[in-house]
Length: 423
Ligand SMILES: *Cc1c(COP(=O)(O)O)cnc(C)c1O
Image 1: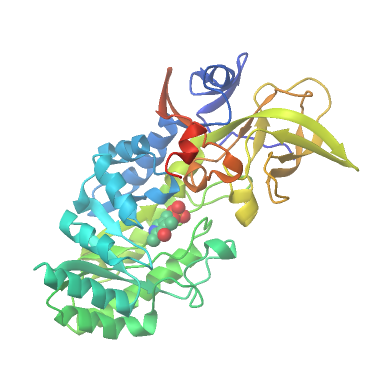
Image 2: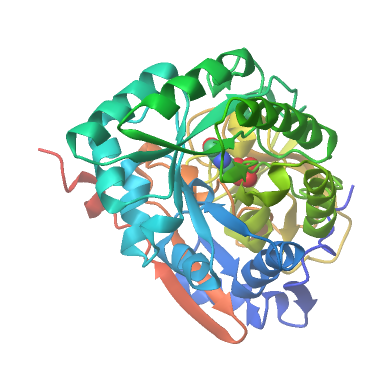
């Protein structure tokens, strides 16, 4: 199968080879080296605008789930666009503030919030804590009361629906560590409503990632709507409904609902619910905003044959992009300048000393013997964000293309910086 990229309009083939907007990847490699993360501002804008348009005229907040790609320039783009942020750590809180984001747009998720993280988020004035357990609820309440504050909270309900994505990225089943069981939520809300350190403001869920059809979202929404009604009947009013993120993207042949179709289904259902129709709608999208706005540019080092397998050894590796190794994630891999001649099937692998260090298997490519450039597509989300220094490999440079302009948004790490804080 040939990887195509018709769904990535910011990527094109020209006589200069593959281009991101108006910049040739060959020029990027010559100027900045490889491996390199290359993002398209046009793509970021387009993805953001599709969600913003789909919700225009509604009381809504689209949060960027920043763990997908936490580069300061990407955060600043979303802050300026009017996004809120979904954070999962104190480090992420600091990053948003550093990028110029406002705490009042932040929802704080995560199962293991530490005391210092809770304190920092409270004093910064986050919009809401998405609470994941009874113990966390009590801890937040106690800290807030100590500080003379009331913590805005929402319970992250585990709706026990199967998102049908990879087991490592499904979060809404009762056997997952995330959220509060649906049947326990009611009692906890009652407890929170009476607590002097807590202010009940919302309800939320997040059922997983890379979900490519509507039924899991609609099933989760039904569970939340049911709870909203029960809470209402007990005099507990909520001001927002947060459906989390998880909307999938096209990596190869997936066909996820468009932002417009996704929102249409959600809003249609909510409009028929007496309480939910009045509530602010919140979403926490990561992958759907940035996944298809970036690629990883890499260079072919060697071609080698072992038995009947042909390997393309490239200079990017699992330490850069771990999704293939971690959840058998598929990323299209295409040539920047295909050679003439018949395509062959290659396993595209990195130099790291692990058999799990592969980026693509049995990919049809037209390659020379070395130095060809390859683009690993759909790498804008959970790419650089999950990279490491394994094998003493400095993390790659990040670049943002905007039309004819190219900006370095993170320098390549130097080898010396890797041991800077060691003795
Ligand atoms: C990771 C995460 C998201 C974003 O998931 P995507 O699949 O990237 O949209 C949203 N909310 C929470 C709580 C998360 O942990």
